[in-house]
Image (cartoon, rainbow over all chains, first blue to last red; front, side, top):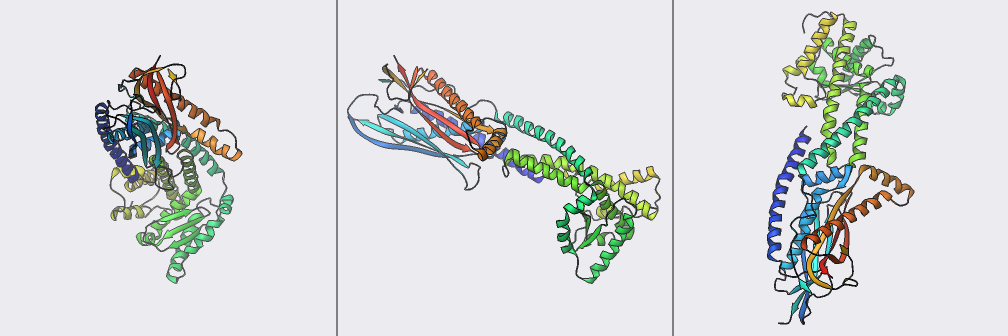
Length: 147
Length: 268
Length: 104
């Protein structure tokens, strides 16, 4: 009986706080994406605009986002029935967009960003098969043209 | 090459339905599926329990017998108690159809309880001996345990727990958090089942006592003690999950049963 | 929509670039497939259930990426890369990303 109560408390905490954090994060992501839209970014290796290049450097953006209890329970249930794990989709979407945004924010004065690559990995408590958090690293080359 | 940036309006990488509806659907599906399979397997367990003869049971739980002997008291004062209680049990056994001898073990503990173990053993705690010192009262409690033996209740509950935990492990993979979701489901169904078996054992105990003593005086001494000492939990909701029915309810049911069978009693 | 993992579009010229597009799915296997996989672990051989599952996931991820590119007004995607990772017990995530371009 007390197990049920503890479980209910954890799930509702996870749900309410998780939803709130997610909504806030998404708002921030959309705002920043709109602001940074003018900075060209591509996953291609070639520069888009053929001008003389002054310098280039590696830029990075990384983020680690954790899973809340509600998402974990949903993923566990999905594991039994199969299908899309919808609770994790938002998590990964947020993490990736955040990582790319941080990458762009780290080189606001660049003219172009090329060769974008994204790496995803999961961090969990050792031994456990439960996943604790998701880590996304975005890296690319920032190009500066000669003025 | 020109650069024409734009942001997509609709985010296709996420699903837009509400997670709570998904959660409700999946949990309901799981509990339903689990409930049905558990029900079917529970019926099979019941069938199997009735088929196991007393001899097979004694042979299967041979290993348990040697462990239980561990509890036997070395000191003399408890040895006297053991003899008294064993005598009561032997006398009660003549009124039942149990073919093997039930062994009594006394365990020093403040708990007011007696447990029936597979293989024909009853462990009686010294707390119980203090709660119901009179022979009549103690006899009812012991007859209740003998009733469990006759109904093969310990085998049933063992089988059901086994079924539940293996099913749960297979579906949810051992220690996952989903097992936490399923455990209360099991708790509730097991509790209801257990309460029904307890009521049956109560009735058999009354029959046995009546057969042995000719009357049922002092049969509910133990329940009265529980109520007096407020050992029963008070919140109504906990009774749904408890393995025994509420104490006052047990007394009332027994009274009704005694009246219907025309048993003699001076007080209840 | 045309998708390629080369730098330039074979046979056509790129006239505009629209930015990076991506598609991702997270899929879990169900308990039945899990049990079949454990049995296969004893005998060896291809896990057809999982192969099918991952193929479906990849197709879905590609479709999502194409939808995003369409919304941006592109008609091709170049430099496509795939990435698979495991983010939950028993679930795997397929992520595909590329640059959306207009070709002619």
